[in-house]
Amino acid sequence: MVTTRPLVGIDHKIRWDDLEWLYHWWIEGQEILPATIIPSWHHIQGVAARKKAATIMTRIWNQPYWQDESHHETLKKTLKNQRLVGYWGLFVTAYPFFRDTAATIGRFLTLSDHFTTRQVYDRLAAQYGDTERIKVAVRMILGSLTEWQVLTRVKRGEYRLGITPVVVKERTSLAFVMHASLYALAQEWMAMDGLIYLPWWFPFRIQPYRAAFQESGFLVELSGDDHFMVGQMG
Image (cartoon, rainbow, N blue to C red; front, side, top):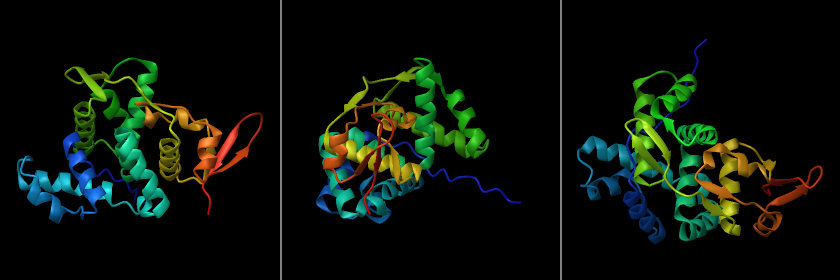
């Protein structure tokens, strides 16, 4: 029996300024494709490196899920109000490997104020395989999160949280986080308070409340004593 390993897909560090660059393209309705990105990105040395970065960005910004009219509007408002939340959610829904890496980091940070590259790699290698590609992907994600100032490198191969957790309590941002979480989990419903405990949202302090989801068009049902389940309509 042949076992298929999950895809990785992240093989280049992503700079915050490049996310910002393409955010403005996206707002203006410009096409985000390798053919449009690569000629503009001479700050990335080498055609192969530019192609890798452009491929990642193309996938991030062209996800069918966020093309849905209501989802698109939620994403647009979230990016306007809380850019890091929006970018983070785009990576979570586009790349399961990013989500799994972020979840691994989040779990380590609940146990200690620091973690090592080796710890993260060992956990992910158990799931994705012990390969050079996984090592590169872990380094690229850690490098990206450090460049975004989400993580701080304490010393070679060791990191800690680099920011005060960002509070997420505005209605649209909560709706975005719920949409992204349900999509990532491949579920139609989840416990409202479950958002607080999803480890891949570790840079954020999520503060969900029932009215935010009701006003955003979600179904909200009581389940047990003061526990609510949130689901998508349709």
